[in-house]
Image 1: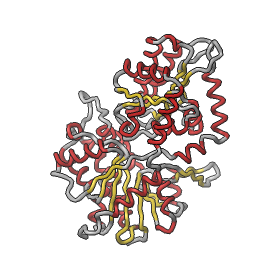
Image 2 (image 1 turned 120 degrees about the vertical axis):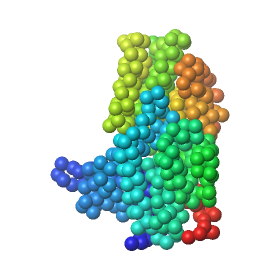
Image 3 (image 1 turned 180 degrees about the vertical axis):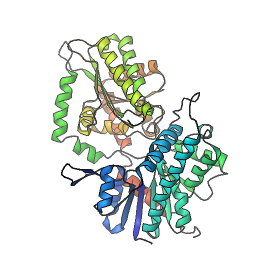
Image 4 (image 1 turned 90 degrees about the vertical axis):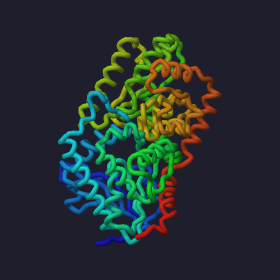
Length: 471
């Protein structure tokens, strides 16, 4: 049955989540981000609908009670199917391929269990395609998000050839020599699924080029699909307003106490990082580089603190639990080896706290962003916008953000611990005038395409070139 939505967004995670309170009532919590801002920008008259998965027991209970909010449709996909699709394929295969994370002597292993999970990934994508097909008005625009839903464009094209379909990848895309490790039929299925879209969006030209190279090598080209680049920027207005609210100010006071002052009474310098404990974020090598800095430049002993926020991610996967444990172990080792009664070299927090992250941004002298591979990395864009005194950005050349920010950052090879230590020394030694000027330029580049405009640009680009597409 055809619906009436003129603009539809599809993503694994939606703009709202639910929890069941002790008294049985439902509590809703809204999220943020570029897509949320974009949908708000087009206004209620656009007839927009967000289709997402019910991720938790609370979400599924909300669906069962019919308690969802207007403009959002949660799909009650079976929990075991979602787990196979999300953890088994999206996060353990596609994420690893696009971020080039496999230890190839041992992994991947594409066996019968993989094929069983792939069937769930197909089922999961088909549920989205059928829901979108049933809710979309004739000729509606559908914007599908990310690697969780690579098959949706092709499936939806078969069901509703009248629709204008876009897909946006928030991750890198693997080069052909890495993408080819996928089984041949799966590789082709993923590419043909994506090519069901009228238009595909990527965060940087590098990732778009990698996708086009894969298509050229494995399926004979793009066909009629267009490819564009939209480098998601930081939301400057929101960040500056939110970072000066009372809870952030309170957390700044706590962090200042944890950082302390040097023996001569001077303020200690801060090297700040804020990440999920995601394998690609390279937190362990960042800590090793900080340890190397203290070894190579003892003048920084007791004069610098590494404020490291490593928020747990995907803890239902053993490799992520092990990685989180290694981050904590190494931080403790550095503190034990170098710390004194009045100085804790690494201030590590692992409990997610957005207000505390903003407090750290404001206090940052140096921001360390050293992923081994990252679609964009918004932290690299957010810290210069929020930092009170201006900060130096030490940035991996493998982050998508490097394409826009590299000229005013100190570039590092994320695998080179000694090189990263020297970059930290250079950043900490930089004079205040140069630091402030660099930070100003970084903030301007980081906010060039704010989230609402990022979304609207994709929507407008989808309108271009689709009028003559055969139904």
